[in-house]
Length: 369
Image (cartoon, rainbow, N blue to C red; front, side, top):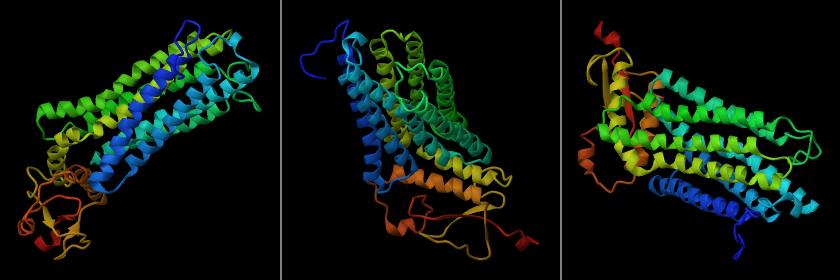
């Protein structure tokens, strides 16, 4: 936004730039903190970090496209814009629309990928995978629909072309799917983590962190309202409200995806995940009570060990994968701790850490025959 330009009734370009660049700066701050902090702590990146980085790139591309559109007259009345500027303006807005579904859907993936590591039961993992598939499929469908929303060779002529599909119906459908997925993301932590053995206040704070995503829903609804009010007579001016909300929605979606990864939230869930994993592992074969009861026990076999000893069998791979995800989760939390343990003590106690292999075994029933 150029200095000295005021927001007026006939020029809303500065307002668009103000909202776009401010919200983008906040989103970048949250996204970078999430990705870089984890790298500094654990010295490794995983799928959720990749999704966050790509979503952030898509959001920045969207915001830059919006800013370019304001340079060509977005937010001003169509009568004051030249034909060449109108063409460039439409191309910029078209680009922002292409990046929009990519940004929104990819920003959901870090949370979904994180929850996937905590889905320790097959039924829960199946539910989570269903949500992930719906999210990714909706992203690809929306992407191709936006790319070809108007007839070639000028699919970007979204404000003047009469050969476009019903965009309001399309965006209404995409918005409805978007809201349903957001509601699922808020509900999934309750479904997946309700049995964690942690303090009630800490559990509530963790659930609230995931529920922050609810603040994107009013933006989706408001965007659809502004789209319905858009005037074909003066599109460059009437589209300004839609663009403002679109940019805000994409950036807020990034922020909402980062909040559950902040360390205080992770710390509040740490012990609960550990205890719940051990209890579920015991119940996997129908055992009752605490771990160690029935025919299950845990054997500490040392770092990087791959084989069982004394003819003992490993449990199902689904259980091992569940604990593998939990170990990665605990690594993210515990790597930031400065607590040092005596090496001799660590050889005598079972410590669940990223550099330790826990062998969960079932006693060979043949030995009891």
